[in-house]
Image (tube, rainbow, N blue to C red; front, top):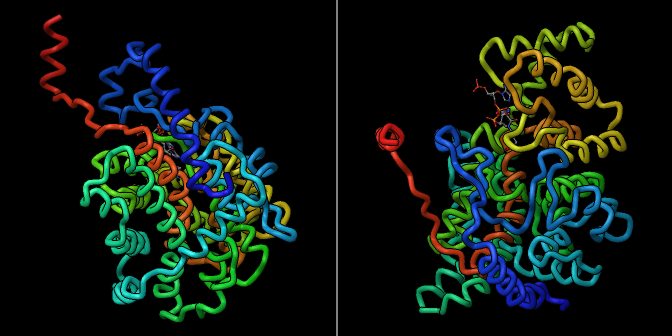
Length: 440
Ligand code: AMX
């Protein structure tokens, strides 16, 4: 199939049959048991959901439809003529269909998204009216996605009585339109908030063929290297299996048959939390503070150790380290480190990040609380953006959100294709737990 829609369609019956067979054979098996501690403790590591687009191995990191990040970098088509990073459109095909696309298939997704990319002028006008100086870019982003909702094909189809078996088609339609429009939305917020509302002229963007470059150029950056960074960034942050706050929020809200716009806005609100997506803005602030506190002192292990302990003694976490599931260095960190080694090996902030890679894990191990002392994706992304001039760190989570749409919305399409029901786990009270176990 050359069209993404047809490729997804061709996978649905076989996948429904597979799920049917798995449920027939194993439907009554116990996948996991939930302890009282897990019920109080954020359901950590409890296997209680199925999510097809990606799977996180605690040691190895994320795999998108079975492909690791280095494999995606090797196998997914790149921008012509000389791009080195995978095109996000190729990852989108992979996430939606489970297959590595051909060059022409990726080309068809690029063209499809390009056709959908223009944001309705009334939405742009409303975004221009927001109080940019006082409103966090993530709040503006969430508002923007909600403002786009009135064009939802899924909401319209539902209202007109479309049968349940067809919801996925409208969901896919909305997902593609929403993904296509996010670069322009993000750029509008960026230029409104940090560049006095001076926008990049539409003629400059119209001819751009891929999402990474469209994002880069709409934000106002001109270097090819920054286009490449955006492509890499959009691929790396796309999906991290189903239980993280943003992915789970999209799934949960979508399970009420809320359309992709409403569902994704919920995901963004979760991504905006400091223990989740907001960590990338916290990291850059923390790194700059480190640099300031170091002053003229050299970046030695001893000096950095002391400053890390200072952060911990103040009762703060060291941002960009640790993970709820991962137990090794995040491969998304490694991919960004490789980019830095190639393009900005002498950058002072990169050197600080490199040095912290040697220092922080030991400090966290000495502290003895964390389950994973290794760096995560957010430790690295800010310094790359800053190097190219994107210095406004409270915008960083918006970029994370643009990327996260690729994975969470692909998964949402499959939720509807498989006809998953409304989510409704059972909760209990402390009193209930006491009575239940005392009775035994
Ligand atoms: N610095 C200091 N302490 C840390 C720490 C860090 N980087 N990471 C975890 N800890 C502490 C926890 O706060 C907890 O302490 P407590 O018992 O006093 O509350 C203890 O170690 C055990 O935590 P854990 O089981 O190892 O981690 P978790 O699964 O509860 O939380 C995470 C995971 C990511 C929220 C946590 O490691 C953290 O706060 N890291 C810093 C923020 C960050 O980088 N977030 C981004 C994560 C990736 C993402 O979603 N974008």
